[in-house]
Image (cartoon, rainbow, N blue to C red):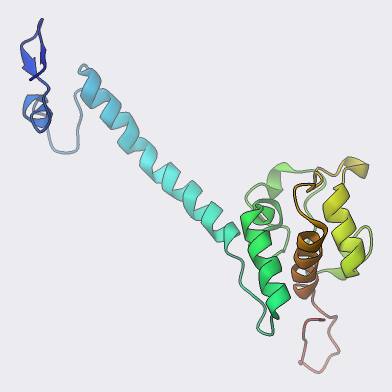
Length: 174
């Protein structure tokens, strides 16, 4: 059994709660280091929860309805490599970090927004080399293999919307 010699407190497992000062429910004694620390951690819980929810939302993009196996693999790469942090969960350029970036991240739904082309090869090349010209802040994803970059490119392209034909039957390009 461990005891604090100067104060005679028993800090053995299961006994520490017996030694905490009594305060009103939901309040902490700021003069006691244990309860002061506990109070700081409890106060941080809502902020931590909000952060985790925003990250998990960005890490779980919704697959397109007609997703192929390759697109689904690319979707997994999008989630596991943090693409949604900047580009958002649905590739709209609205991720949690987007408001801190100038220029803002690409909206993959807008084919006109692609700087280096809209083919699988051109998007995969952008993923490989990054996009830092004109102030862009996307760094190269050299840790991905050529195959993984192509799969990720297929997913990004699958998010692209085809311009409206005016008949109300808008769809995504393959």
